[in-house]
Length: 185
Image (cartoon, rainbow, N blue to C red; front, side, top):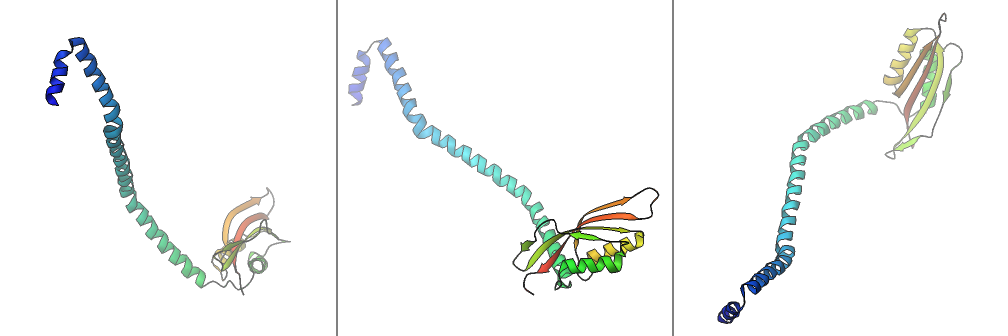
């Protein structure tokens, strides 16, 4: 076969040899590139991308683990704090009792529920309240806030608006508060 090809090749003119050579290279590239070169190139590209993602993960992982450990410790502290809390009574009743006793709200107070409670883990309902009252004593307000956030049934304060009019001794207080209630009593 080698001799037949050599004879065939010698019988061709220089121009035919160039055309056959160029055509062979062109056909070879059409066959070799998609079957050999492209898959190898894609494999290296995919491996490079995977390596880049692994390096990124490797560099971020210690920070994530440290943050996770901190959050886990904080969760244990919060769990310990709320296991001491008395969540047996309705948060609204507790809040109104605090307003009467601790804040010594002058005049009337108003507690509204702007939205429905949200179930948490099947054990608790997270309830939301907006509280409006007036007081003339910063000490009473401070005692109220301390009892509200750290008392027998601790609640979360998400917003406080204080308004004192010029020439007036009363302080208008608006709070957004949320508390927890046990689902099955």
